[in-house]
Length: 65
Length: 297
Image 1 (cartoon, each protein chain N blue to C red):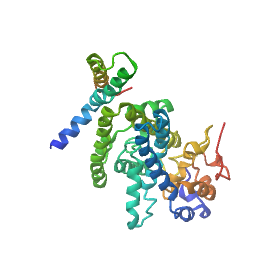
Image 2: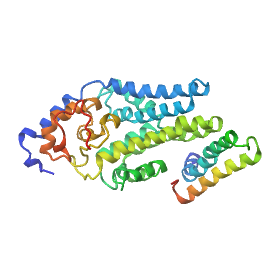
Image 3: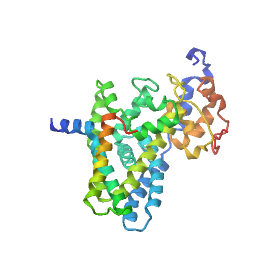
Image 4: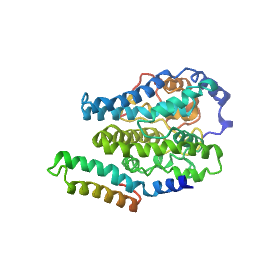
């Protein structure tokens, strides 16, 4: 039952989690390496926030592209 | 398609099968080498890049090449072409099938069962899991859909084949590996962001696009339903060695047990049978396929 719930959650929310964790980590690394924002709290929020937002939009649209 | 009664005894299915079987005996060692080799190279990229022994962009190029070579060895395993019916060698099918797909992040069991259904129901809009790829409007649309992940409608086919116990069991068997392939990049990306992106995620996407375009789209483009009608001989500007000779994919659909590297010779031997059966494009098959680039400008 719990396993099924986890699977359902992943299939429903995988785009959001991918946006938040995967895209967020990439954006965070880009900001740290290539901008003056390295190490700042603002960069962290901007990176993971935009990753989560892209993931949420993809979830609502049902597609990435 | 010509009716069986119109086919002369000279080109009977029985004779076709005997010739095809003569090309279905050899041990597919090259494919095992490619499958395990590309996975080993891909895996070795991680310590090399992380320790600064290899530039990340060079690693990305190599990983992308590995990903393009990753599917076909698993495909041979899906058809049991390593064990060739020997139960003592079944482990080899599983081993190569699983390991080579690490680069593409796909669970072997799911690809195996959906591929079997693709063979059983080729070009059937409801039951062919490759239908959306093969019957798309353009190659660009195929690329978009693969990048989007919208061609992977595994849930849909779980419903379509819900009464097929073997299908459902294999599907469930694949779930832990599927979850691992979902979770692993999400963990790795936190620790090694660019490496995960350029050594795994992006190469897997490139490999998936390559595989879908050349294995699913071009061979079935414009074809219909029926044993001799569902896959075609095609050629374009690209030498066949750059697309895993997928111009010859039709012979695989007719006789899946023929090893990949034996297909050119098998086609040369079977060409009169293919022409007599009106296989799409059969009249354009050159007499010599072996060592022929099959370029058409």
